[in-house]
Image 1: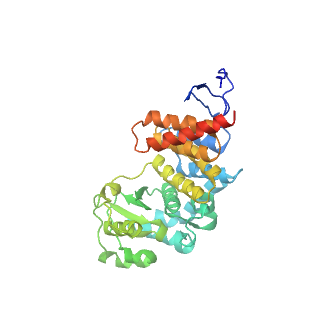
Image 2: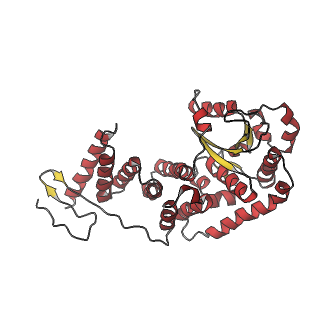
Image 3: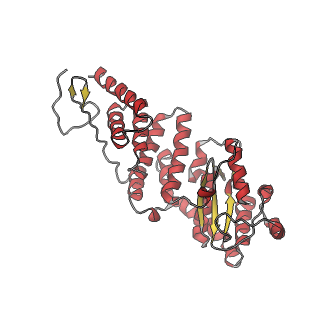
Length: 339
């Protein structure tokens, strides 16, 4: 087969063959700025501290819901904060503020963890969480973080293995045990003198589990949550001492969505979320690998070849390099068949 001349119209059919050696390239056009992906990419290109989690989460949801009115849901967050603000503004005790917020969200508004259909993709979309009042740990944590931002209460995400919680720090509370998880209301205040102080990263913090009614946790409770997921004890002190940043938060949210799509064999949508992940983490070789493999599954062989070759260049000694070379060969074979 003779080599095609290179030209400016680079697409999935452009390739060069020299014996069995491929020099294949693919350049995906950048997303239009007015699309959810284009706006997300622009947001992700800025400093981590300037990434607005609520706005970014709604841009992700807009990939599923074209034309989503993102302002409507940002206003919904503002309205929730306005409703609870009188109780927060008049209370100086941080534990009482947390309890007030728990009671408002879980008892008055009915937000709760979705234990019956955990894998439902809607649990990962902020607009659905606000409408359906149910979600998974990370999206309910996002709700707390965003309301806290509006109320002057600083929450930060803690990515436990298999579970996501949040932490309020700066002041010194007394913490309630795991047994009180399903009764995180005003009644908890009467028992705070009997509770155990949390000391993992210092005394000036409160750990909360938004998926379980905003239960206030000790380090031992966190260990138990992880043990329930893995069936064994896993060291978590380092995790507790390192809150996730905005980029890491969104990465975990997008990985949840991608995993859900792959589980449903919706590889087209999984690939869309992988584009979001690559916009967030363009320096990570693994994101190129994953996009390449998903491109291969969806028949985008040019993109697969480009991304898999990028991965091998960035991580030539990776443990899965042999497997990736086989997938790269399969993609190249498909190109030959089609030309």
